[in-house]
Amino acid sequence: MRWILGIVINAVLFIALAGFFQDAIYIENFFTALTASFILSILNIFVRPILIILTLPITIFSLGLFLFVINALTLQLTDSIMGNSFEIKSFGMALLVAVIMSFVNIIIQSQFMKDEKRKK
Image (cartoon, rainbow, N blue to C red):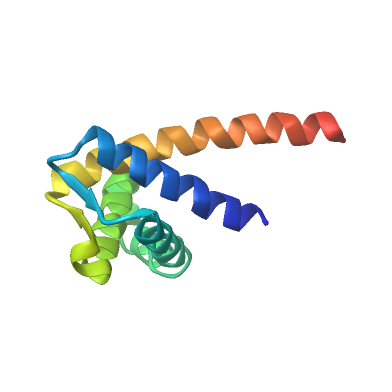
């Protein structure tokens, strides 16, 4: 259930970012955003750990900041899989979207964690 909620939250975030950065991000409709969010989550499960292991020295040297580059790469890979219905114009924009999505997801998860701790 939590995984599906994360996909929906990322889809809403994609729509919001596409509205904010209209010239740099294109999403055809909400179903496309859901599909892109699903593909991104699958890539985060299977491809991202491999990229993290391969780039571990760079990640350690950059004190973890290279993880944003890995997130941007997975966004670019999602863009290439989705075709013309989901477009991020440049790697720089993918990097900015990765940073924004990371921070928003941290904030949202911290709020849900507070609610779950109160229930226990």
